[in-house]
Amino acid sequence: MIRSRAANDCGKADYGWLQGRYTFSFGHYFDPELLGYASLRVLNQEVLAPGASFQPRSYPKVDILNLILQGEAEYRDSEGNHTSARAGEALLLSTQAGVTWSEHNLSKETPLTRLQLWLDACPQRENPLIQRVKVAQRQSYTLLASPDGDQGSLQLRQQVWVHHIELQPGESWSTKLHGPRAYLQSIHGSLQAETHSAQQQALVCGDGAFIKEEQQVKLVAETPLRALVIDLPV
Image 1 (tube, one colour):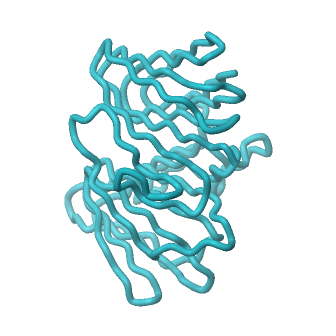
Image 2: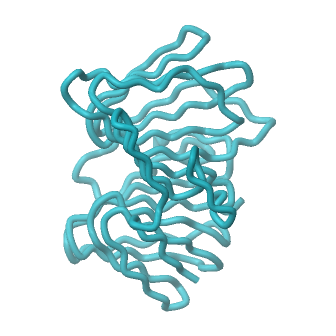
């Protein structure tokens, strides 16, 4: 089964300093049918105005994966750690009890745009508070995050694999899935998604899709494409 989640149907926020699009229930947006998917709890695309900040806050035990699409962000925690990430980089924050985080758009001129995932973390596992990787440009496939940090990827505290795909029109990419569920997100561009059971789903920029009980998925780009496939066995 593959079922689309159109960008226009997602929750939205516009506070002036912050604009957001929420795939699942988040903040003021609540849908009892959309409280997450497997261990994926949050998938937000947000834009912070120049100079804007999220004030320090605590989090449940999740891995927060921020993929920076535009601008540069700085993250500070209550333990005195701080780091920055810019467009073309991804940052993983491993939340811990009693530790708060803040996020800041470092530019006074350029908006900060990023895609953010929250993934449930196994209670018994601990990782470094901060991990960061560069996302290879003009490379059709990058393993962005995985349970064991394979191929230099960010190491998650959960059995989840996050695949980053960039394709040109007519190019395709496919992968076998580890378990019964996955989520597909188009960051920009249009595509056809095909599953092992021969189902197809067309997606355009910002659309997502729930994938369930499929052994593999194939993406075929119709325009220049950037997308994530989030493999969610748990």
